[in-house]
Length: 285
Image (tube, rainbow, N blue to C red; front, side, top):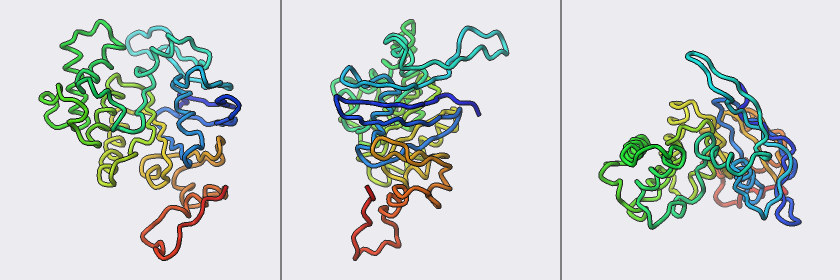
């Protein structure tokens, strides 16, 4: 495998508050990396920095190096590639990159969709944003195919329905369709099972795992739930108070964690063997 992303010495400030403090990790081609930690540890801020979506209120330093294709390749050729720092790229370059090369599934499927636009129009808009020459009919065809790929029933018939006419799990599937319709190389899934019941969570995780393998995606899977991350990730980075405190293969980290914070996170997860008469273990600060 080769690296698609290299994050080095990344710091993020919101005013005088340092939310992310010098974190470093890599994302390999075709890899699923789990980024885990409790609320406020800096996971989502890191993801938004990768997408260039933090806005003027944030100050970001360090480097987020992305392997991009440069120039054209002839038949059977791969073309040249180079690593560029996304923090140095102009706004129009990041706008082109988002959705086409790196896509993101945002938290809260119940509110992430525009309530006054049909879901078909929102998915088709994702196509036309990166392919302005694409006709409305072709964009509609691609949108329906994307909705069918994420198992929205009667996708063509429901193309003109609004978000409130879908369940929470179906809305999450629509967001996944929007993220993947342009076949990005990297998918950032920020708490994609938040606010979903356990049965629907399992369905969404299985869907993401299947699509990741089908399209050879690299994925950064963000969650506070180690049990969920363990189902999808091959490698895990644990964040605490804006820092990455432990990184390793998923199986090793979940069975033999080295850092005290990771150990306390695992102890705080209830299992079938947990004594319900006793309070859950406290997370060590």
